[in-house]
Image (cartoon, rainbow, N blue to C red; front, side):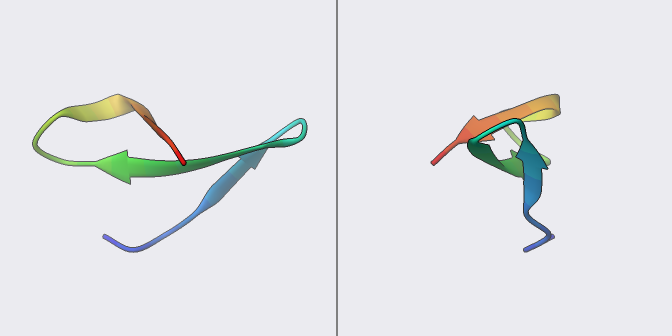
Amino acid sequence: MKTEYYVGNVKIKPNLVLAPMAGVTD
């Protein structure tokens, strides 16, 4: 998934391999 979630002022890119729930901070 290349879906980008914005939490506050932080862009999070979910990674199905590393962190499907927490996501990866870009």
